Amino acid sequence: MAVTELRRTELSDFLRTRRARITPEQVGLAPGVRRRTPGLRREELALLAGVGVTWYTWLEQGRRINPSPEVLGSLARTLRLDRAETDYLFRLAADPTVAAQDPAPDRLPAALTRLTTAQSPAPAFLMDADWAVRAWNTEADALFDFSRQAPADRNLAWLAFAHRPNRERTVDWEQHARRLLAQLRAAAGDRPALAATLTRLRDAFPEARRWLEEHQVSERTGTAKDLAHETAGLLRIDQLVLQAPDGFQLVVFSPRDEPTTARLRLLAGG
Image (cartoon, rainbow, N blue to C red; front, side, top):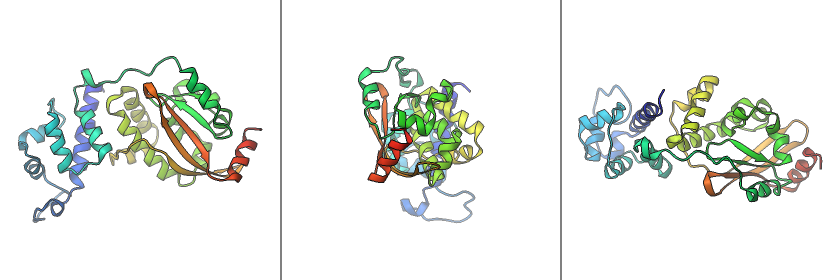
């Protein structure tokens, strides 16, 4: 599927799922009877947003339309989108010939590579704007086996599903995997490589396909996470995401307690 067609499909699905979650009562309309689908009807949403019914129908059907920022803002308010969802809407609806982001740099900044290594004993890795893992320290390699992965598989989203050991270690893995997919979808709005990763996950993992159909979107932030490691024991960490220039992100698994710090040193053979 071409990038432009894929973006229109994503926009169509996003608008449809967000319209379905808004009830008539939430926007001051009578619920009425004989509603065959949940949420607002297209004509109700168009009326509330101040746009034509035909125009909105075409937009939701994925036709070639260039909505203005004012119209997108009105749709975002009517659909009660949060900041991440609003940003995603604007990027999906933008002209793909001017909205596409630059490819990830080939060369890694030496300072970021040093910073990644310096996080020991906390596991840390550096990924680019396409979520390809480009550098890591010893502790991160012990958890994710980055050095053993093929370059095409060395992607955070792919490994979250495909790297069986880390998947089995992660307490409440489904919750974290769903969250990661929502973050990936938000980032993929104007990055073809990330859109390709979404497609690859859909094709390879039935659960990813099922969760992606919910069309959740979320900002890329850190979280608390527990790993039940088979030899090191329980690792209680705060996953921090530090933004750097050119789309690079430094991800650090900061230990939440002293026992975790000691176990991480043993894990890395220190």
